[in-house]
Amino acid sequence: MHLRLHYPLLTACVTLGLAACSAPPIQRNETSDLPPGMAPEVPGRLSQDQANDVTLHAISLVGTPYRWGGNTPESGFDCSGLIAYVYKSSAQVPAPRTVAALTGWGQPVPPATLRSGDLVVFVQKGVANHAGIYVGEGRFVHAPSTGGEVRLDSLSSSYWSRQQVSYRRP
Image (tube, rainbow, N blue to C red):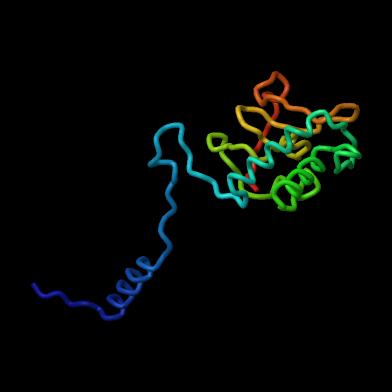
């Protein structure tokens, strides 16, 4: 049997085949090869030492009065002022000054890879309204509200566990 190839058709097939070879690879779910309960490591700009410094500094500020717009221990803190102050003074990393800007700062982190020094950002009706610094063991430091003070709370408390939350790694 004699096969007769049509040159333009052959050229098109070879071109398509080569184009497929140079196409970017299909993205895989990177967690598919990990054991259950494990998630890939999310990169961040803080070293482990810097993350530890951020954590210890945040904890040391527990008890500082809340003040809307506050951004120093002397004047008091609001939630984003606390975060900006701690990251700048502990790790020399400038942080955004508003909760809205913190929602896009750094990388999103799956809960399974959360580590001390990460951000905890609370969202209500699609709008970020509060943030804190994760310090480990399900706890975070934050400046909660007028009349309050910087405190350490648990993400599993009856109030915070009902809130929509996202995690960010600067």
